[in-house]
Image (tube, rainbow, N blue to C red; front, side, top):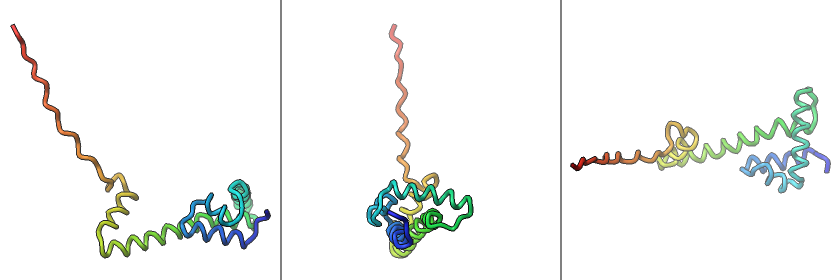
Length: 118
């Protein structure tokens, strides 16, 4: 299969809707190995400043992924207006060092008492 603008648009749309790259490839009608080949070619074409379909694919995958992320952030933000848990969920997952749920420390065990006999 040859890469064309139609299939790039389909793939990017699926990714923007939230599909992972491999599943989006299947839905767009080509194999993951074909995608990987085109993606690597696109990376090389970007370095060489060539205007190719592979480069368009390579450069627009991160844009589609960012758009997907933005859609979900908007949904979380809207949900957080009515329920604080949406904000807590977001912070726990995006900034775990600061906000992740932590198990309480285990209680200190009593020190064993030693009795001397004799």
